[in-house]
Image (cartoon, rainbow, N blue to C red; front, top):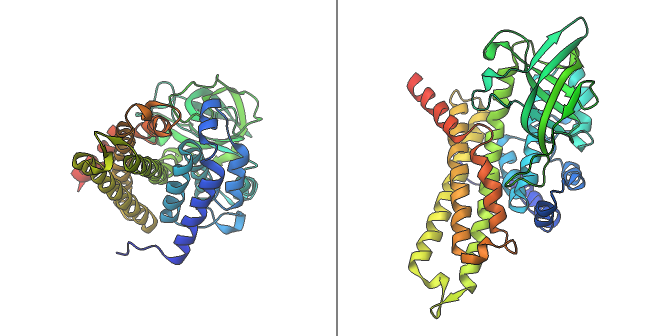
Length: 379
């Protein structure tokens, strides 16, 4: 087991770190305050290969592995959590098309996704089915040429803005086996969107309901076979969980660095905060937990790339641990700033707001525990 990065991985990490410092961090507070979706910044990231990290080179992707993806999203999230997380979702859809699509679908959709001329969203959650994803109600009825979709999806990142939606819809009976994955384009007749949600965090990305009212999309836009959609959706989420774990680590790392710098400058009772042993111990625990989360995330990435039978469990473990640690570290960093941490003049309150949702999305951390327990008890 080698914990060192290769020369190529170091270069990828430095590229993402420099991009985050130059293109994301200086604007993150303004994007958050104004709910600005930074499309041009995302397209600049795409120009550096970060819109198709796992996609093959044939259609313009970077053809990298899961560890490289984790390195990239840790760095990007240190600059702007919300924007990095949106790019992770776009990458997830691109990987799904590359992995499960046919030659025509890959050639049609992927090149423009790699430049983010086409922006993509992932549509699984519904108003009545969150953690119980296999109970979804959106239905796609086929005829000779098209599917007609009816139903709605909730909390969709990119809803109303994205150009392409990977939709899990019911084409068969109840349960997971009746679900297919269908690509719906923004100009599809019968597709509409709810109002933009007003969120606690992730404010630089739009979020809205996606609504299907006799929405027609070609049969040729189905990824994989009928009934394979739930498996495709879950495969996408394995990688998504690694990326959201990395996003939590990146944000928490930025918060930890801010707390360390603040403790070195702030004086109380005639001493620097950094000279109080109790606060030193808190900083040490934050750094230790963060490093453990990073190593667990890297193990999950290696496991998924290797096709390990326990890869789904490893991804769930990494997601559960890293997102809990990420929130805890950000919250502790805010506390170490005292009242200043609560002000928008400092980034800590934004970090706390942004990482909180990581414990909910890509499967709640309660569902992560369920995945882990089922695997352990099945052995």
